[in-house]
Length: 369
Image (cartoon, rainbow, N blue to C red):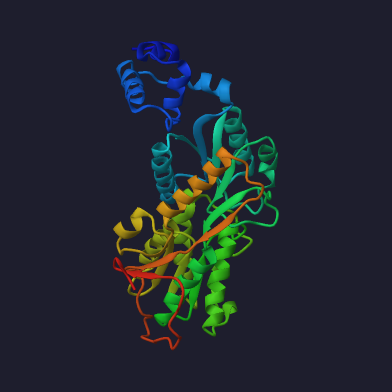
């Protein structure tokens, strides 16, 4: 039955329109069970669906949140969208997905359009060095939480941020390789101008220093002056890095990749160069996307606990939708190293005399150790 109004539902149920509204919005604590059951039955019988436009006219907001990601070409962002959508739907919200391609102008444009459409809030996945471009939208009342980003000095003070500890993740990945006897390591990232890539490079260098290795002897490919790459190009970047470095005079025996797609590219590039990932060279990724376990060889990687991160992100956004926290909150979530088959002892058989690590958990073949 189409075109049913809230007043028709109220008349059929023998209650007021405000009672129907209370049922639709979950305000039923003081409602008699019989009344609630009767209203719900009529809503189902008449196939009533609230008019979003009318609700926006009354409240200025609709139960929809925006999710701005760099690009779903990287499966990590697709997995996040799935996790966040499941949580949002359980709470009565819908999700609109936008791809920014790591472009500040596109982030701003999407934010403006979502605000104009009356969404309840926005989850912004941005690792740009500054989020100053979003400040005008926050001042106009847009509720926002930054995901996969540590708080930066120039960020708006009211902005909440949630991220895995990127420096810790890269540090445990690098330490794993050092413990396997690797001494000539490469960090492959493309540009390190973004927040997350800088943090991961910092963790890489910290692990080298802690092991008594000279960070200057490690390779950062292609370096801080490199052109930014998009998520869809990460695999090709990794492939090119492996081809170039393994064909050089002092090839690395191990690679730390900026993400799993880059790591998969490195494995492919190693094959192009006549090497085998997990035997001749070791490769560690970051994210633990679905492909990491399905790829051959299965990829050793740093897991971002997406279910936990998505749940915390939604709760932070919901708190801002329901009220207006005066200050943002920066939350770092612990990563976990998942050891699979793309890493092995260094080819020369050397072993590392380094103290056992503490802190982050490690998972080996599905077991936490």
